[in-house]
Image (cartoon, rainbow, N blue to C red; front, side):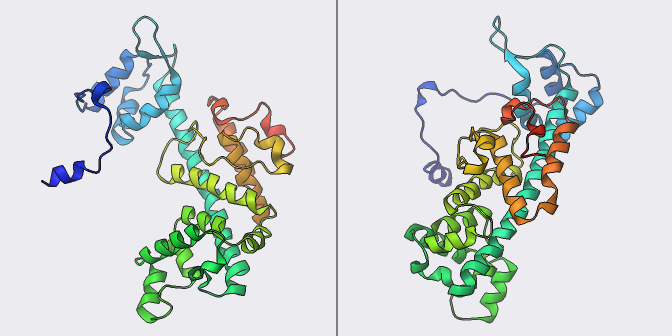
Amino acid sequence: MRTRGLLLFLPRYSPVSRVPYTKPALPPAALLAHVVSRGLTVTDPIEALHALETIGYYRLLAYMRPLQAEDAATGMRRFAAGTTFGDLLTLYDFDRELRLLCLDAVERIEVALRAAVISQVAVPEGSHFYLDPAQFDHIGAFVEFYQTASREDRHPAVKHYLKHYCTPELPPIWANMEAVTFGALSRLYSGLALRHRKAVASSFGYDETVLSSWFRSITYVRNISAHHGRLWNAPMHVDQPLAAKKLRCEMIPTDRLYARFVVLVALLEAIGPESGWKRRLVALVGRYPAVPLRQMGMPPGWQGRPFWT
C-alpha cells in the first residue's frame, strides 16, 4: 500500500514510447572499457579508474557529450579522434572551478542585497514590514515570503527569536534573510512596492526592473553551482537577464552564460570593485585554453573589450 501511495505522485507519461530499464550497474573497470570502445584514448588507466571511482561515470557523462559525435554507420556516439580521458577531466576541472568562482560572486551580491533591503526598507518601515501586505505590489509575493519565513524555524537566528520573544509571531526581517535562500530573497525584492524596489536599486545603480531580472538570472547560476551541476555549457533559456542600456552590447544575446558573467561583474563593481572577480574569471579561462568558449557565448576577443579591461 505504501508503494501504491507513492506512485500517485509520480508523473504520468504515455506508455507508447517507454520501455523497461534493463541497464545494469557496472564497476569502474567495465565503464572504462566502455568509453575506450567508443574511441576515448586512456593514457593513464590508474588515473581514469580513480576518476570513475571518485567522480562517477554518470556525472562525467555530461562532459563526454560535447566531445562526441554520432557515428553515421552505427548510430552510436563516438569520441572525436585523438580525444583523451585527460581532455575529459580538464573540462570537468574547469567547470568545477567556474562553479566555485560564480558562487563566490553570488555570495557577495546576496549579502549586499540583504543589507540594502534592511537599510532601505526595514529602517523606514520597521523590522517586520514583510508582515504588512501594503508594503508589496504583488500579494502573491507577500504570501510566499510569509509562508517561507514561517517554515524557517531551524536557523539559529530564527530559533533564538522564537525562544525569547512572543510577538510579533515571526522574527525581524534581518533574521529571516539569514535563513531564506537567495531565490526567496530575489522574489521578495521583485514583489516589494515600487518605492521600495527603487530605494534598494539605488544601492546598485541600476533600474529596479533590470535588477529584478538580474537577481532571478543569477539565482539560476547559483542553483546550478550549489548543486554541483554542469555550468559551462548549461542551457540558459530560463530567467534571462534584461540587457541594461549601458551594457547592451555586452549582454546580447541573453541566453548564454556570458551575459550572466556580465551581470555578476556589473553588480560586483557596484558593490565594490576591489573584489577582483573580473580578473579572476579572465585568469581562469586563460588557464584552460583547450576549453571551447562558444558554448558559454564568449565573443571573440572578449578579454580585450573595454568592459573587461
